[in-house]
Image: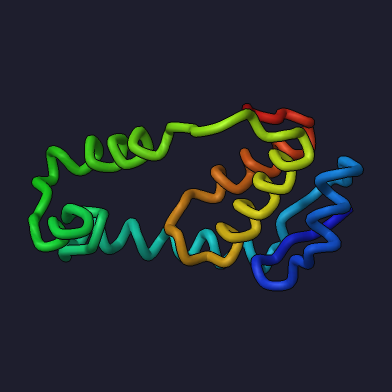
Amino acid sequence: MLTIDGDSLTIEEVARVARTGEPVRLARTALRRVEASRDALVRIVKSGRATYGVNTGFGELEHVPIPKADALRLQENLVRSHAVGVGPPLSEDEVRASLLIRANALAKGYSGVRPAVVDLLLGMLNKAVHPV
């Protein structure tokens, strides 16, 4: 079983997990970083402090405040704007590598995601759920 920590994943490990189905788990140190990052984001939101992409627009709209009542819709629209695909479906190995790399990136603890997001990605990987 491979343990990811957000810092030490190698290309050889990515290839092994992608090709062999080796199970993956999150290191406790990484879980603590993800939790701390999420807690920090929650504190920022509660404070009302202007924070790029959380309660402001994106890009040229970075200085445009988003009313609290619209903040959830902003985040939902952000996810929807990225929910598109171009080109042929990825192979199973490519999907597995992508799931692992995304989980490892989130394990760094910089994104503010809930730990359940990383758990979901690893659960999909470990149960051979390969989205197109």
